[in-house]
Image 1 (spheres, rainbow, N blue to C red):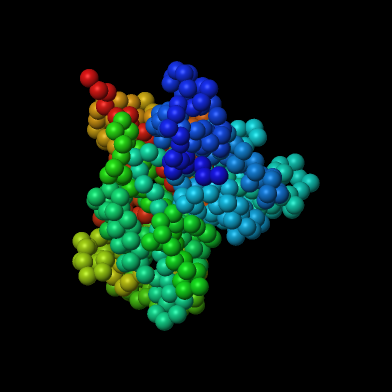
Image 2 (cartoon, rainbow, N blue to C red):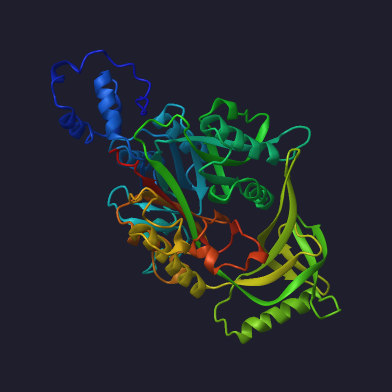
Length: 540
């Protein structure tokens, strides 16, 4: 059955023997029905359909997590939970363990939801959400350990490892939603069509909203693709108010929900997919506004002097070999000597743990979309340091040019914990309201004087974080769950976190100086997307 209940013709009567029921009483009854029964009730008659529409005037996010090692049982558990209350799905996202067959899981979900809504199923290193059975919020990061050990979680035993799902179903009246793919031809010029991807997003937005600025984008990139240039181009092309979050290095399947964005898998690879949220230019009267807010907890810290790339060689399957110079010194720094000096600095700073090492490269680039030249922009891109020899040091990834400046960064759990505390304060301001002008986009009171209502959230967290990193559970989910208890929250642990933070967020305040550029693709970080609703102004 179609769950939307929007295409039902309905009868002309008032619902047979219950036609005389007061609308308020009927609304109270219908509002207690599970989603499937609610969808059937909306088809009884025009009057019932109208009452059902009154039940769902505000946005809603329903989510559930299951660690049942049986795929079919896990899918059943999460669907039983998310469809236990009225909802007309406009989109669905599922995060699953890699031992669950991606194709089979996606098929089960699309069959269950029916209709033509956009659906994305993405494999993850771990999942975050409320347990479908107990409603307990859980951060599940799969790590094979000693099954006989006292601290081994049941989901990390060999028979249960990488088996689980968190499902999110969303209803956002006043917005239109579609999945737009980044395609790459399988024949001929096998280059990702990034310009077309950005233009498709803007064209879809214009078709439903009358402007080219989406409200928000949730993206998923393929793990075999370098998403840095894609994210950089989107950041340059999209206006500041468009939020962008996601997982840049996953494995996904999708259904678009829009026929114009349906491409044959026989002809194209799908390097990424963007779930696009755009304002509905035909929004019904009496519907408020759905708003997205993004903030993040960073887990890396810069150190050492600023350096400049002198020579850059790309080889060995996407690795870059760099030589560097430092202001005031005429000699080019040898690769291994530079890394030895960096390690000495870390020793002097008495860093006890064995941190992962990165460089943060400031990239000044010209950007165009098709024949349209965009403004030049400055961005910050992270590259993991792999090693070096006498002449060069080696980083994972490409895109660095001679003349680019960079700093070394290392992972740091204290920085991550402190940054989580800053995120908590950010979200507390969203909950309570604030007169601080630095929190203009965070405040919990809208311009019309009505309080914003947070109805859901997403988390995209680095797979290197979690309980094993912090030494205690739920550090990443606490800033949201403690501020908004019982509000649906879902997320995943991933390799590269996409997060274009909102103006005024703690991430911007504690970030690098503006000259270093904005970072949209992070390492050792957790990205938070908060979805809130502003009711329409009260009619006098």
